[in-house]
Length: 59
Image (cartoon, rainbow, N blue to C red; front, side):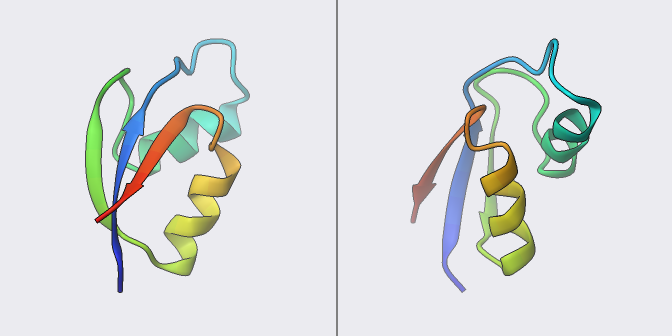
């Protein structure tokens, strides 16, 4: 599977609880924190739900 680097670019303050939990599940939580994940269908779905808060780069 392809790998991606996910970086949080916006704050989760005043966001719905569901989006906050998705950010936490991705391993993020602070602005400019990055994680490397394999691009599975589950991760892809999470990325789509919070795409306005993160930046994604493919490796």
